[in-house]
Image (cartoon, rainbow, N blue to C red; front, side, top):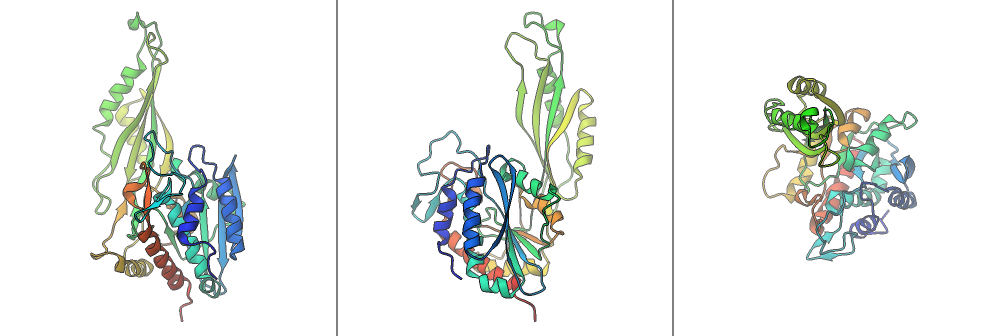
Length: 378
């Protein structure tokens, strides 16, 4: 079977849908994609998880007894930002070998590539162990779609042999990513008139004191592959008007961790470090992902990618999180590689693009992986 649309054309179709998150609105894009997949032999189940929010699970069932190969991809994108775009953010422009659009690198080009790869290798999938596509919304705001999938008891998730996450890696196979722990720290004071601050307790001052302490907070030692865990205060809020003593303030902390660090322990240590003057709540809690680089399927994936890189492929991780943080445990903890055509430096950037050559190379890699992974072992 051959895909009606080329990988470039399918990417442009996906880019044309506005799936900026918030609010997401992935439903229209995924409904269109559901129909396209059904026309090409997939079984498709649609799973709404909010107003105009949707995930889909699509599969080509294999005739052999092996486990299917899974692909994971999200269809939501980040906002366009305040800077003006020189190119159409909804995918009409291909110029000098670059396909422009919000989500081209992160990660609609990868979604198009693995869909076309599976369609082109349809017979391999049918005669072999098959494939399953996990297409989600809400990844950019903390894997909301993936969380909805695993929390819905009525959804029977597959147990694949391996998972490929199509996030932007410039076709370099990556074996893991850091975990993410996002915390909100709140301070509470007492309001008073701004001309009589001695009658109040300024919650902003309490927050500033806490942020001073947090700069000396040690998350843990460096990991051999993931290096030092990181901490960043990204948002601060406080006060209602200039002539009042604020009685409430908050700041949000972004921590990136490795598999040796327990998020519950980190939160307890931070609470002790800041004292009871600060109330801590969890916004996002996603574990780190790390697959054994010596796993046979990982080595096979590296070998298929090596011709597209001028130096030997080495073990790498990425600092950003993916849906794999939540999905892997629910899928039976299969080996996982993060591998996609997007440019890592282009994710979330103005005039985001994906190199056409990398997209075409990725299609070839995915097709070879589908063939190699799903073919029954003799």
